[in-house]
Image (cartoon, rainbow, N blue to C red; front, side):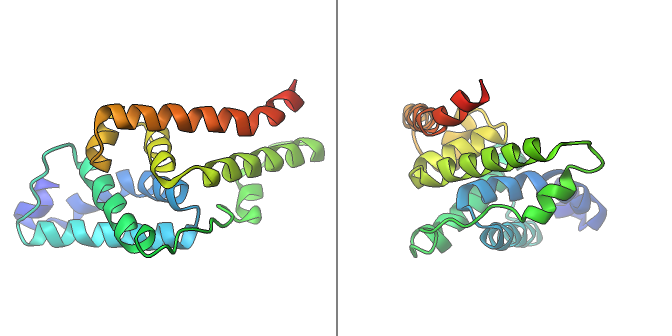
Length: 183
């Protein structure tokens, strides 16, 4: 990122972009529950990174990844949470894409339906979480340590820890029937 900022090297930015684009999109998808919103916020965050770098104002106090996710999270909060446009979650993925992801795997139909039912239950359980808990879980699922989650969200570490704990308890309760069926 420094090479991009200091020299305007597009190849350097391309490397940073390709390393982080999918993870950022997945985080925003979990956060918003809407692929269109996730794509839009992701693009806005990347544009902000480019803008900061070109102005010479990109001076992260944390890792690039933490800074990027903070920018994206703040944009999502500004654009969607505060406007109350993120109150209704939609299906997170296109069924055709999910089937394509199975590739050439030999899967019988009952397993496929069970998997789709499980994915739907998980998506619904995540969507039912309060936004503050959902964002903590989404960041944690992206591999961020809770200290980094606190930095990204601007919440105190103990608050993040509580949000994660309560979210996981709610997810366990919501998904308990699914776990019983799997036995």
